[in-house]
Length: 347
Image 1 (spheres, rainbow, N blue to C red):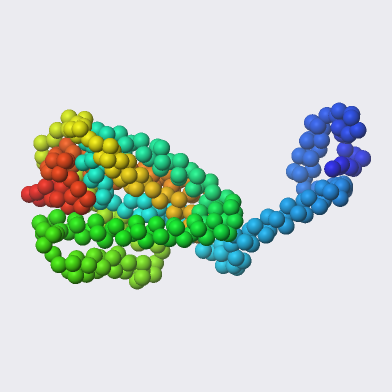
Image 2 (cartoon, rainbow, N blue to C red):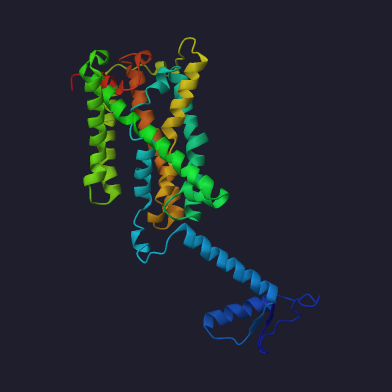
């Protein structure tokens, strides 16, 4: 590619034909002409091969963009999610509250559980957040990881990714009505084993329907609804934790305890629960087409979500261990109802 400039431009010994030249004069001329906004009469000559390569590259980019996102004149109007909305939407895909984290402490003891709770966000949460932010910015379209896999490995594996992600979501979401059901039974002191199967099934199905209602009936921005749900979930735990620590004798030394003779399966349970409590960050990418300015918003939103998830587990677990009512060895899934009841007893 050779540039021919007007004769009034002094580009002495311009690099061409093996002759080295100075580029300072050229840069100064370009800067001056740009500032004065004057048109210059120069021509750029390209070889046929260079022109063909550029045309092919442009066509490939346009085809990629069209395949990633159908043309829609209203697409830009749909980009209304900022980093705060990304944070709370991802939070409910990853955590949704401290329920189910009791095994972090009861499986192997407070010390290994808290060590794992600190390491898991650094080893899993932050890398997943950064990868999702980078790819979500590179492919700012709805579909997320399904689009990534399709672009990298083709439509077959993109379909597999979509199908198995759907199956994983169905199985994962089925756990939450069960956790809520167990928490209600423990809170009211009802023995689970004495209930008929039909009663248990109807109770769980009713909870699942109840959880689905906000998505069906809510017509406002999704981020606002989820922030309301987030406050409804976290405020009772935060209040219960601070009231428990302030009104009960605490034993910080319990935080350093290790369960007696934990087995390999106990450590496996600990690792499994920790990973489950921080998995799902990549789900934010499925709404990338709704995010305004995806680059900075994805980074801030996802890293904030990792921090929020860590605090969601750490604050009530540390407070409950120090109060130690009931003892952490008695904790199981759904025990937070009983734990919080003990911590705020009398209030």
